Length: 137
Image 1 (cartoon, helix red, strand yellow):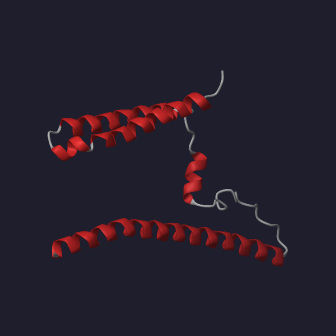
Image 2 (spheres, helix red, strand yellow):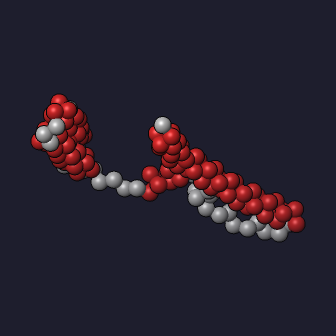
């Protein structure tokens, strides 16, 4: 009884702990970005009050991003043939799962071998996605 409770609590903390950690990191990065913007604003306001030439504006593009995820996606260049690679991987994974379950010899595994078809059909769907949306050359 105690082992299952400890295992359940460990699983709960493992899943939600990572989510909480990601939210904390995201929040700290947003605070740092906000502090940087405030420092730039204060510097410019002090220069205007003293009548000295304004410092050059920094690149606000780095500071104005929505999130680190949006930042990563903006810099990522995807190959237009990515569905072919992911589809082939999915088909191989699904067929391997189906064959392994079917050949395992356990009666329960022989009944659920068809779960491997999920990966196969996902791969076929990705192939169809590529065929229907590929760039015409």
